[in-house]
Amino acid sequence: MIPKIRIGTDRAFPLIDYLFGPGKHEEHTDQHLVASWNNFAPDPGPNPERHQVAKLANQLDQPVKALGKQAPATRIWHCSLRTAPGDRHLDDTEWATIARRIVHATGIAPEGDTAACRWVAVRHAPDHIHIAATLVRQDGRLAGLSFDRRKAQAEARFIEKEYGLRQLTPGDGTAAKTPTSQEHFKAERTGRTETPRETLREAVRQAVAGAASEEEFFTRLREAGLRVKLRHAPSGDLLGYNVALPGDRNRDSEPVWFAGSTLAPDLSLPRIRRRLDVGPATDTTSEPGNRTARPDRSAPARHRRDAAHVADHAAALLDGGDDEAAAQLVGAGELLDALAQTSPVATRTELRDAARAFERATRSHIRAENADIRALRSAARGIVHAGSALGRGEDGGATAMVLSTLVLVALAAARWHSARGHAQQATASRQAADHLRAAYQQAAATPMRTMCEAGRALPETDRRRHDTTIRTVLDNDGRPSTPVREYDALAAVLAEAEKVGHDPKALLEQAVSWRELDTARTLNDVLVWRIRRIADLPANPQPPRKAPATTENSAKPTRSAQRPAPPPQVQSAIDLHRPTPRR
Image 1 (cartoon, rainbow, N blue to C red):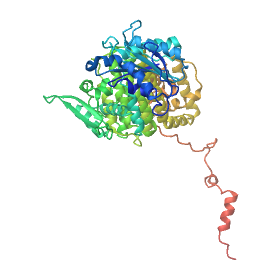
Image 2: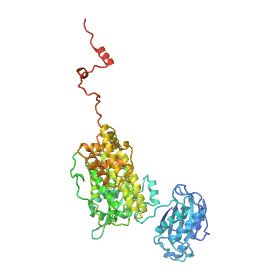
Image 3: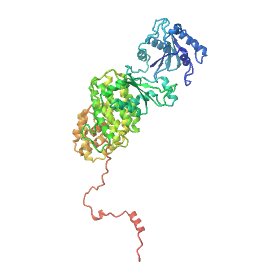
Image 4: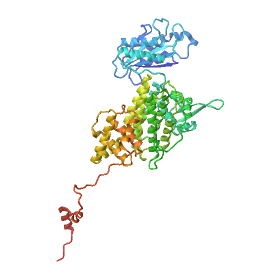
């Protein structure tokens, strides 16, 4: 059950008129009261006359009118309560009880308080109700609404459990503000697929990913096409910033500005400055494990391989369970934002969804003041500056390499949050892992198919030898036996590494010992990419070459064998074109 609370400056009539009206899209049906402050409030009913709506609104407004000019500017409290899709439909009696519990929990009308605020609960759809209340009590005092949203959410969790409804995860106050219904309606009217708030939040996250300074951050915002307004103190010091989408204007034709802190708690200028103070490490083009750059690799491929190495280290820190690992979540979020804006179209949608989901996992009340995330920020910066990977070197393979590692990072983040009772963040981490798996499948399809073909094309003796190595190492690791065909790609990469001088068994043992493999859905894929990184093999393997056909008897060919006679039908065709000999 999702309670949404809003407060307004109007009197009761506009809200009551809307609740008993047809709705913006004729979606309101069977409008009626299910409960009220005294159980005797007049019910306008479906399709009411205007004076009937005014009668109910006037009764609600009486305590406000009694104050005259001393009435508060904020007068109306509005809470909508909606069950989750798939939940059973509650009847009017159940909704009435739920409404009384909510107004009691939030302080609008504590049980037994006869001088509390006046309120009504209106039902005009099977799955939700609206509670409208005035914020002046009947004794003339103002309602105490401290933490009303948090109290409503807490009460909703109890209601879900008692009524057998879908139980949502409790929040901790660190989530970004969700768009209002007005923002959704405006987006729908203007033909947008999402609200400006959501578009701006993603754009600001991508602009800060790997940025080295405030100047670079603001430059990226402008290059993304956003309007940027800086707020300065009288001394000239920069206090904050606002962003707006071009063309998004209010009724006065002025831009609709959003401060960074209203987009998300961690996008305020002070919080961004903390991240920039940890600035990215010095840019490097060297491979982490080999210290030498490969000139045959494109910049996107090199930086994706670097990112895979850094992400693997972040996953290990998260598995360590230290609170300082909270900073690794922030760095991993920047890495996802960097990949989302530079990846090919085939994987971009899933990566954007993964980055949006993981954004929730980057925020909690745990602060990691001493953690160093320069390596993650440097990896994000390298990916952003290298640009799109499409068609540039090892685009598919290098992207698959880093995505296979980021799946493990997301799962490690889920375990880290679960251990601390962060239900929403753990759920968001698992959602990000699902999107990353989908993106990985798209990026890895071609290179994995090529490696599987290469494994099947290995000579039988080599294939048996590598299969023995695979089974020996994995069985020693306590893993059950798996059909040989599932290790086609792994056998191919071991053979490829052996050709350049590596010991296949030692290489596989090193790959297995790097980190746990229990969370890997496809053990073969994880080991393949680890070995390609350890052995510094190309991320995009070469397709197997077809061996020339040979006969079983390798005797020296005779002169006639060297010049085989053409087939009869070919010979006859040649004879037809041969000139007739002269007689």
